[in-house]
Image 1 (cartoon, rainbow, N blue to C red):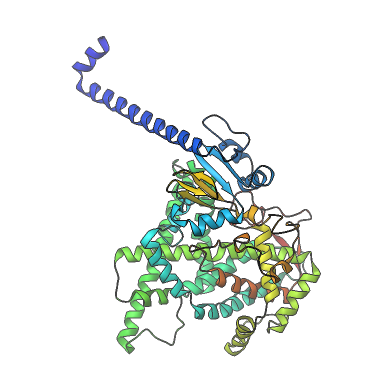
Image 2: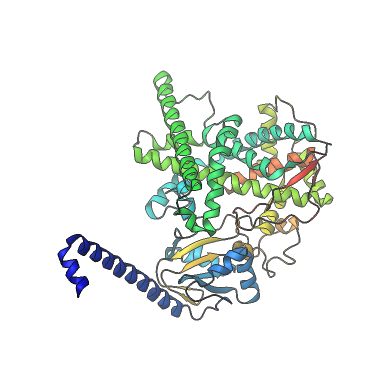
Length: 515
C-alpha cells in the first residue's frame, strides 16, 4: 500500500510504472502470440518427419551454429526423409530437395510462396533493396520485363569481348609468376576478373575503376552480410564493424548514384548535340535501362535503379568466380578433361600463345564469338562448368516463405512456414546423378531426366536472367586459361568448401602454382 501511495504522490513515478507495465504486457503478448502461432503451425506440419535433436525454445539453433547448415540439411534429407522439418525459436522450417517439391514451389504453385526476407535475404537488403531478386508482385513483373529486355542477345555477343579482354589481363599477371615458387590465389583473381567484366557490362567501368572501388567498398559489405546470416545479432549490436558496414553502404550508394547522374548528363549532352545518345561509344546495360525509361525520372526511380545495379553486381560476379575456381581445381587433377577443354579452345581461336598488351582485334573477337555462339564451340567446356555447379552447388540453398495454407505434394504447409529448397541435396540425388561426388562433365552431353534436377539458377518464372551471360563469360575464361597454363594447387590436402559464405568458395582461398 505504501508503494501505491508513493506513486499517487509522484506523477512521474506513476508514468514510469505504467510505461514499464505497458512494455511488459506488450512483450508478453508478442511472445505468447509467437509461440501460439508456432504451436499451431507445428501441429499442421505433424505429417512431415522432424529433424533429430533440438532444445526447448531454442529448437535447432545451437545445432546449426555448430556445423555447416546445408551439409546438415543434406544429411537429414538423405538419411531420414526427402522432406523434413525443424525449428529455431519457434519458427517452423521445412527442408525439401526432390525435383517435384521444387517444381511445386517455384512454378506450379508459385502464388503460395514469396521470398523469405526474415532470414536469408535480410542481411543483404542494404545491397539488394527492392531490386529484382527481392521484389514481389507488380514491381517484380515490371523489373523482370525491363531486365529481360536489357539482357537481349546483343549483350551476350558483347560479353565475349569483355571476357576475352579480362582473361588476357589476368594472363599477363599469371605470366609474371609462371614457373616460379610464388603462388597466386585463384579465388581472389577470379573475383576481381568477374567484377571487371560485370563493371564494364553494367556501367562501362574501366578495369582500374573496378579494382579501385569494388574491393574497398563492395567486398567488405558482402563479407559482413554473410556473417550476419548465421549471426543475425550482428545487425543490431552497436560495434565498429556496424559503423564500417554502414559507411561502406553509404559510400557505394553515393558512387553508383554519381555514375547514374553523370551518365544521364552525358546522354542529355549527346542528344542536344546530335539528336540521340552517341552511337560512337559502346552502350552498356545502364544505357539500355535509361533508353527503356525514356523521359520518365524521379528520385524514387534513381533509388530503384541504384538497387538494380547493386543487385546485378552481386548476382553477376559471386557465382561466376566460385564456379571458375572449382572448375580449374577439378581440371588440375584430370589431364584428360583438361586436354578436351584445350582442344575446344584452340578450335574456336583461343590460342595458347601468351597474351599481349594490345589484345585481339574486333575482327578476331567476332570470329571467336561466332564460333562459340553460332557454331556451338566450347560445348564440352560448358559441360565442365555445369558439372562444377552440380557437384559444388555454389549456391547450396534458396528460401521461400509460405504466404497461405497450401499443399506441397500431399503435405500440408501452413501459412508462415519457412521453406528451404536444398539445391545441394538435389544435385547429389543418386536417382538423377549416379556416383554424385564423381566429376563427370559428360553427364550434360545428354538431356536431363528432370529439368528440376539441375537448378543452380533455379527454374520457373523467377529463374536467373543472367545465367547465359555468366556461363558465356566463364566458358571463355576457363578455355583461354586452360589453353595457356597449367595450375597446381599448393595445398596438399583436399580443398574444403567454406562452411558459411555463399556462394560457396574454398575455405582458405585457392593458392596455386602456375606453369
